[in-house]
Length: 455
Image 1 (tube, rainbow, N blue to C red):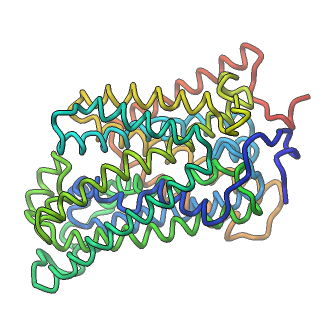
Image 2 (image 1 turned 180 degrees about the horizontal axis):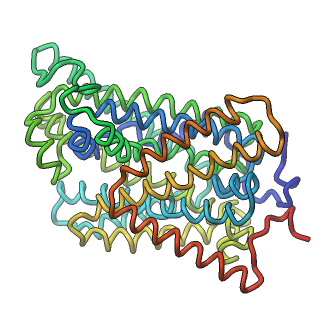
Image 3 (image 1 turned 90 degrees about the horizontal axis):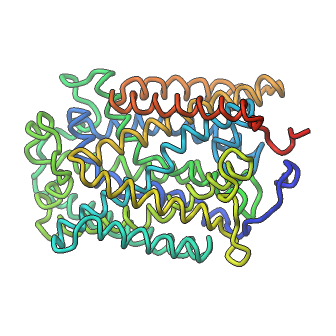
């Protein structure tokens, strides 16, 4: 079994997580009921073929999960795609991959807090959105500071709660369908010939993949994994597979019961309540309230808890390699957590979340930016697999080290091309800024170099 000492690092984080802990972490990061919060957006964009959008998203993420699993075996360290691209291709490419996925990892906690705080504000209007944001951020920061084992214990409890709510919805919705409440044909959510186009499908998939983002977060816990590195990759694939089944089933059932389909497709889900309206139609107002509260707690506490943990590990890994300010690499000697990185993520989440809460389309804008950063980094991940295994090592495992990453790259290109235009512009500017930072590092004599490469 490879150790991080072989790559020039010291073991500072606590190795206490097993396969089940990692898989549950990934599931909580993806949120088993994630489609509840963005159902209307995906439904409108896909012209009602919401289940198909999730299937396309699964295909893109399945290839990516396979590439993650391969690179996790080769380089069992924290840092996710930053580490894999840096060591699989070259340190400067690793920096750009890390910079790209920072757009995802740094902004995703803000997005989660914003969605949850908005939902809670709708139930308790007397407490403003910013106050809910502060409460969620403080709670999650304290839990993450207490250590990765505390985070793991809480994620297990939250996973059971989310699955219970999902089961209730599916049972009630199943009864509604048996009573003849279906609003469309049984296979319309997966394919509608009059509405299908590849551009529509990929545009919807670019939104749906938000629900899958998180399985990759497992890779940031590589230095807290107590088992063989191959188990890390398997936990990513397992978490993705379980989440995919849950996503497709719940969106298929919900799409069959969605009232006012034509209006939702034409006007979009401006209030973000499409799923909760569907729940009310299926089982009554109590089911609408249950699913809405569950979404708020899942996104604002459970999901953002693990997102903050993953983001802090990415910052820690990049700072340890002198790609970010050194103070972010500080590890609390007692708790064995990257304490400064955790606090910085909390601060950024708070500021960005409050700012975006003042914008009319704040949630949509954050969603698009998060997806752009992740997809761009994943493209580099696939390239890293081919270069490291197929080219450098001459691997004969053509499926895992050539065919799968090439197919994954192609599918992701289709998703990125069909993303929100504004997100493409802002994401492009972010990447350009990363190139400027990289150039400045070279001019200042701090060119990217990994420990084993330092002379």
